[in-house]
Length: 285
Image (cartoon, rainbow, N blue to C red; front, side, top):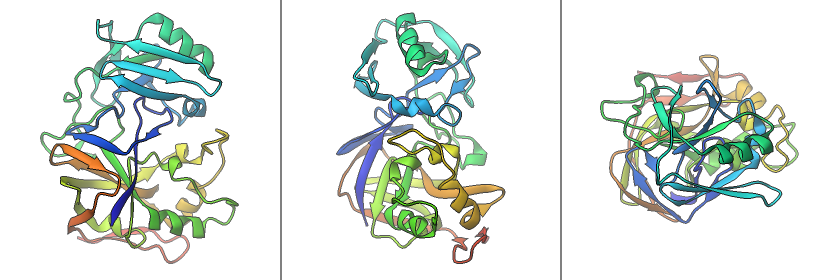
């Protein structure tokens, strides 16, 4: 098995960018989800409710410098080196973050037609991974939802495509907000893994990823539909959630690359029953 694609998302819920390699930190990939949008109350704004966020792309120029572009060619740059106002952020243990200057927030709010503030996570070691998400003592995460990285297998995506009757074109893996895509595995076998090595870097599998309505937004048009959640609900449903991909927590710092070999460190008895329509996932102890 090898890595076929790598992707980072500098701003939570913005479009991401493919990269050839990425530095792995305890909290996630370098440049991945250290920024987010919040409302006036400090609540995180995401593409679950506002799919127009996916029409913006961000690039980290330096650790504290972010460039955001829209689909019409508009570009804005923010530099947090001089610091900014600390503001409350209500995002599962984050507490506070540093707010971007007002002119940046006006630019974003105008394009999104939504009142937003851009915030930056200056210290990515303060936010722990919740135990219900597979977190252990010392595990930390950026502003990603529940784990530092998300891995998707090409074979599992192809199987989902085969099940999806209403989709005329193959599902774009971009929908699934993955960091790592691999080939060479049997469909959904990744859900049995307890750990993997990518190149020289070891990862623990914290949980299978439960999927949300963000996957139903078509990446090029930003139009929301019913797939793949409709098919996942029929084929991949357990505990009233739908499941696709696995979440990873780094055990080592290092760098991963396109083409890196992926080796399984161990396997748990997590066996998805996916042959019959409506089947649920079964976890065996």
